[in-house]
Image (cartoon, rainbow, N blue to C red):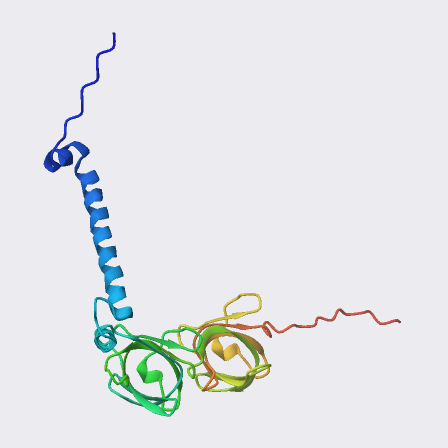
Length: 248
């Protein structure tokens, strides 16, 4: 015969914690805390969304305005003009209003194409995108999180052109879509012919078709930090003639 089941004993919270284990009890307390926090948030939202709990409309509005001042507000401009830079602080104009933009070590500075930039690269008149937060109630001072200078159009790329003029550090070359570009090479630049054989900078001549890999600056029409140059005009083709015996 089966034995009768024993009735369950009620156990205290402490014993229950020992029975279910620390992890399970931690989860129970976590759920409880989340429920309390959720209830607080709902109550808090109702408090600032309108006159409740016998508060007048004026009192509720005062509370909402006070809370807004405590919470940092997002500041974002898609089109501003840089006026000046003093140290790490920028003066910009947007919508006919002058704003102060502060930067620090955490501020991300970018060029138009997404490359990393610096304040030293920026110039008066540059067009900027700014994202940050307001630091004053009048909303004229921004602590910047990201600044993108659309006027600094530098990007790494590969460029083709014909050598137009030789210089002491490289040459100027004419390109099909970007006009004349000034190429500056260095001791670390690798030079090859079309067969990938090593050559020297002095081997590059006027009229040669070259491919240049480096940092292009659209404002200055320059290509710097050149890593590689390939001269498709080298080696020069030579025409061999075979002697044909003349008729006697």
